Structures are given as C-alpha cells and as structure tokens.
Length: 128
Image (cartoon, rainbow, N blue to C red):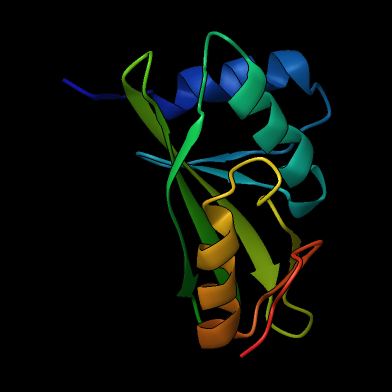
C-alpha cells in the first residue's frame, strides 16, 4: 500500500539539506520557494531515502492572487508519495523546468503553460 510521506518529516529532511529553505507546511503538502525548486527537486529525486523517481502529476491552481504549481511525487521502490507546491507570481509567472529531472514533466509543463501561461525556464519546446 502506498503511504503519504508526512509533510513535517519531509520538511525536516529538506531543512537538514537546505538550512536556508523557507517552507510552508500544509496538511498534505509543502510549499517551496521558487528559487530553490530545482535543487530541491533534484534532491528529492536523487536521495536514496526519498527516491522520488516518478512525477505522478504536475498541474497548476489559480488562487486569484497568485498561481500554484503542484507536483505529486512517487517513490516506486519506497512506495510513498508526497505533494510539493511552488507559488508563482501572476504578473511574471515563471518557474524552472523540472523535465530534466522527470522527463514526464515535458508534456505536463507544456499543458500548464498552454492553460495558465506559466513559463518553465529551460523547457525545450513551450508553445501553444
């Protein structure tokens, strides 16, 4: 059975690796600062204890004042999942692309760009 990795436990692990990180902890998610998104995602993927090798879903939410980009991650070997989010400014909606970490993000980022206009720096083919 797949279990949800507790956001507080994941936050503690991230703070151990990134002491300067600013996190918002929700009931079943962590909100990351966009500047560290790429480094954190690489860590989540590569760390053997976390082993988030599969991006189950990448989507976005319009919160009226800002956008959220939501990443649902899955460790197939450890059989746990986690949800992380990044807040994106409405006026300049840009995040780094994670497709080099999870190739499946290629299509999902393109869909978010098409629907919400959020640009993903480093994505090889964003177009509507």
